[in-house]
Length: 142
Image (cartoon, rainbow, N blue to C red):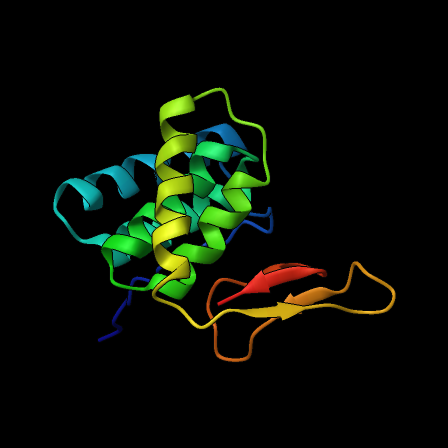
């Protein structure tokens, strides 16, 4: 007796997977970050806001990075984000006032180092830090 075995064939597409448009990705990460923030999961909110900040050049996203880092008890990271935020133009005076107040308070809590280079404009990176570049020289970092 001859047996017939069914054969399952899978056809794989060689096309690259579709990638969401940047605006959709930004909305996705913003929603995730805000949900984590509402749940008081500040570390997770910070990670999602970091993804958002890579997609959009927004002072508000940088401010949110500072706020979530501060609430996650990461003062040096919060300081870096708030200083970056204050170097940008933003139309929200309340947010700017809050960031200024927070930077002033953090200055009293942190050891600060002024980093300079010749010529100026060198990218500052801290080994083991997860904020990426901390700006360019000259700059004060925590």
